[in-house]
Image (cartoon, rainbow over all chains, first blue to last red; front, side):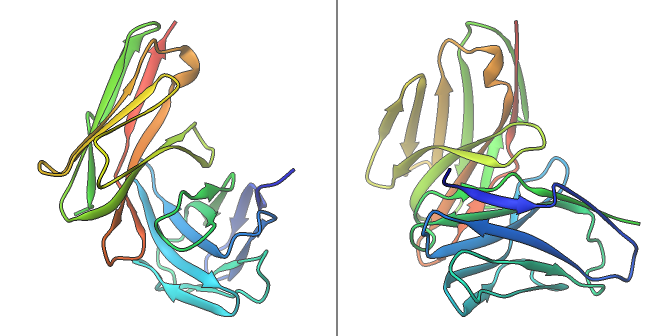
Length: 113
Length: 111
């Protein structure tokens, strides 16, 4: 099956710990994205990558880091510097940058206590 | 504030009725896209309309775009209980190089 997978579906962490969310795609897409969704709100862009070994900050990058060492993978690390990390995190990919339709993974719900 | 604003915030209708959701935006766009999200799941792309198009159809979906009013509407005809979801518009802003999502409309279709 082609698509985007995110793991785990639910993640619980203690405050002060870094945590890495996985995102893998087998669609051969060049561009990948990470979004954050809070209750009753739309998606806000954290980071995006248009090509391997390159990535750009989105609107809310503070407290997050990413890497893009392989075309298929775009992991997101939520660091202890992120002041309010509890949220639903969505990964997406597209054939090219920006203007194309985006394909989304099922999401990871992160709870930090 | 966000580029895209959906209206209404929530909509409740009976099965078989039509559902209309609206989206307004502020700056010039390359295209406008509509997505659906079932509770606790990822988003699913529904339809993309380019800035030089006025109307587009896909199955029971009809999207219109009025660039002079900076607004779009999504019409779902003959709604079904399975259409219950949140619907988001997203705009690709010219020279912005990213999609900007609105806060969404929650649609509930009662059977």
